[in-house]
Image 1 (cartoon, helix red, strand yellow):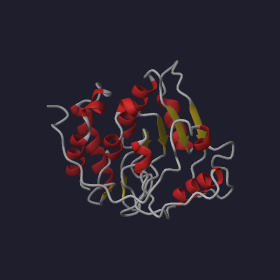
Image 2 (cartoon, one colour):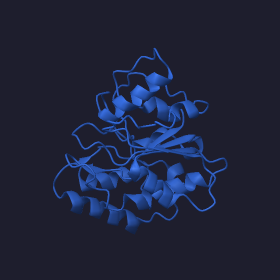
Image 3 (cartoon, one colour):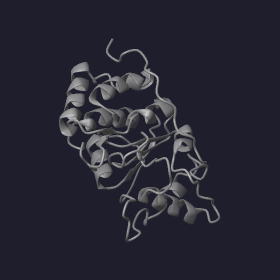
Amino acid sequence: MTGAELAAAFDTIPHAWRACLPGWTAPAQAALVAAVVAASGSRPIAPADPFRALRLVAPEDVRVVVFGQDPYPGAGHADGLAFSAPTATRPSLRRIFDVLEADRPGWTRPRSGRLDAWARQGVLLLNPTLTVEVGRKNSHTAVGWQAFTGGIVRALALRTPPPTFLAWGAQAIAFLQDNLPAGANAPVLTTRHPANDFDRSFMADGSHFARTAGLVDWWALADEVPATPPQAEISWHN
């Protein structure tokens, strides 16, 4: 994805999400795109569809928000949903599936790593940073995405009732702490990031899946087909 394609991608965000971000202005959007381009130069940006998570679940349907950090940096690995990938071979996904399997022995792991089925049940899979330079993890964490994704957190946290927030990893936890409004009573569960979980401490204090099973059937995953390209709506700031 190029800078021009990123700018155009903002027009694929549904109107319901735009209404949650009344303070997000055209200058702020232009500045963010410019910062992403400056950070990457002519090198490719991933994922190709950074706002796919916002199209799969409407704000009023969000029951759980799962926060990661930034997209998978490998070419073709990120698909626009936090932790989701075309195949189930990413270390984070393997560890997530380990917990699901421990919660429900005999559960069959999908071959696909796509987590669209969660989104269709009201799970917003949101990275605080929505893009990455291909091949360089954390390369866009300082470009300013948090001003955009933080607005999403604040809007959802003030809803009645609010969704449950699951923050996986130090970056996700810090991001959530920085953006939860004072007095918000949203349930929050935290754990370490599932990638490189050599000491098996991911969800060591209790499975987030088991604790939120009344909200989402986390085990209802299937082998997903690739997503279709997004269609632009009218320009955000027209």
